[in-house]
Length: 91
Image (cartoon, rainbow, N blue to C red):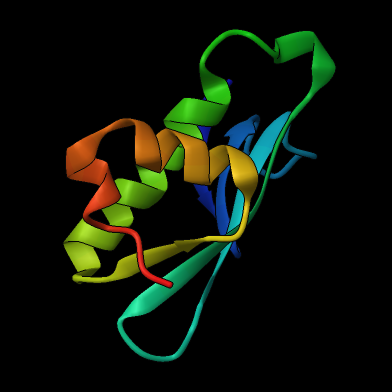
């Protein structure tokens, strides 16, 4: 299993199959993207997969010059934990 870019975010699992974990995001039309939802299958929880998915969105946002609107409470927590990541948060 591996991490990969999905249609509306990133996922973990075997590509072209139902992902075992995913994070969904969408463009807000300007210089912002929203993280809508993070999900990890119960059998994989506690392994840092959700955090890695958030970090993939962070890498994407930095590369594209975008800020992040964390509508997902888990993503918001991860971003707020690190002062450098918190700089990427937009309302």
